[in-house]
Length: 190
Image 1 (cartoon, one colour):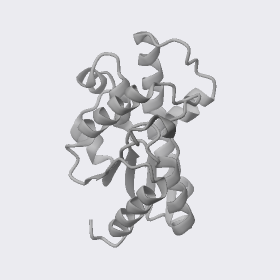
Image 2 (cartoon, one colour):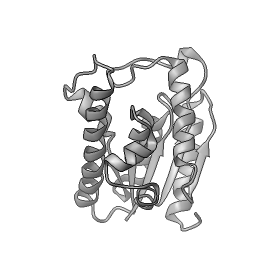
Image 3 (cartoon, one colour):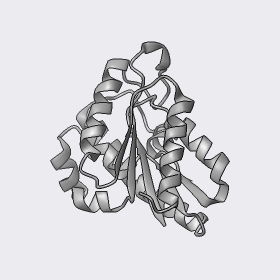
Image 4 (tube, helix red, strand yellow):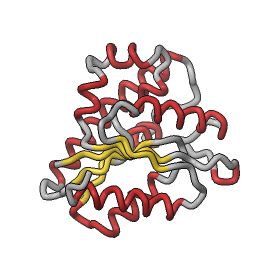
């Protein structure tokens, strides 16, 4: 079963794309939900941005991401794809001590993390403030969200099947580009 990461900066349209894919493909696609939403929505405190706080949060998110991906495969073993709302490496962007320390601390490396996923689809967010809204998970400023987007882009750039959906404020259009990429993956064209 192929795992596909959907990543990118906050407010890039990942949720919209996943909704459209589920509508079209039904049980052919299983979704591994975003672990950060689960962790922060489940009560992990968000009021402390210290290094120690981020360290523990990202370790929890990394472990939860792996478990949610495994569970998705067990829930629907006939699925052709598991769409992962973010991947295990995404936490490295937030890690207070840098990417190398993230990998070392979690006992992994880029090659291992890239190998977890058949493809990585990166969606970039719009650059206009009116398309960005804070939530209990999305707490950074628009400027910080755009910086994070660049960091996610760099982080995943070494993956052999790295697909980049450019910035746009037309979320449906971007979702349809993702849909086209998924169709090619299912048909063995990517």
